Length: 95
Image (cartoon, rainbow, N blue to C red; front, side, top):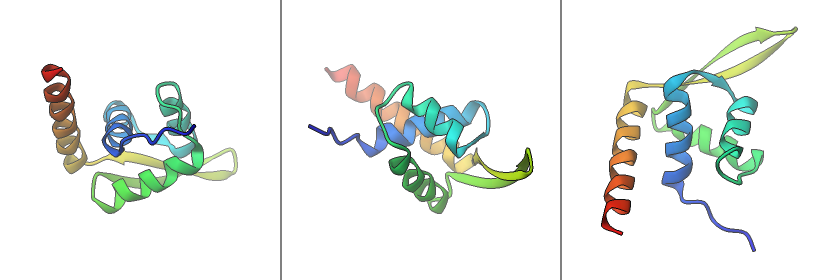
């Protein structure tokens, strides 16, 4: 049985990791997978959506002859992260 992971959990996880440092997609996916069972094919649409919503920006850097796309949290993404943390605290505080 496959369990649907709540959007807020994925968004919050991505934003929290990127709040401490920028990461390229593959490494970010591996970091998320340490905490949440999610496939690489699930992560990239999440990253695109967060970017489209203004929570993330990207930049490319060369690494060993090829380009890596790095993701960086924006000030809007930091505000979104605060909202997600507050919602989770409210949820878990009530139970």
